[in-house]
Length: 160
Image (cartoon, rainbow, N blue to C red; front, top):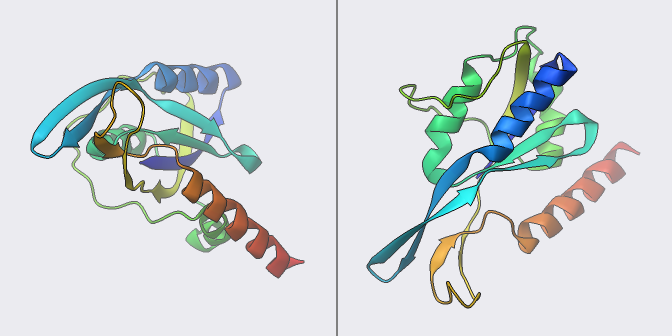
């Protein structure tokens, strides 16, 4: 699962938030038939064009991540129509309803975010030695990136 956002605020505080996000550990579920395995993975922060960041995490933690960011949602509302080209460019879906019971302890003082949307990953069957044959969420995948690049070029061509 990918959550795209634009952070703004004091530079050191934004960097501290990004650092906290990168240090966050998540449990990734893997399965082979009825057998389930859980492994610890680290959250990933990707830097995208135009000051956009993307946090990559397992889909089971969607409510947790969205609630953590909703606590300091954009104080300066931007008209939704202004975000449509960015969402289309990044192939993002709207943010769904989520539970508001838990939140991560990231330091978010003096930092606000503009939430852009989410992108879901599909499942893959791993071929690495240790996890060969185990199915899990593909948190980073080539097909999605090819679609992103092709979609971006098509969108740019339409504006030129």
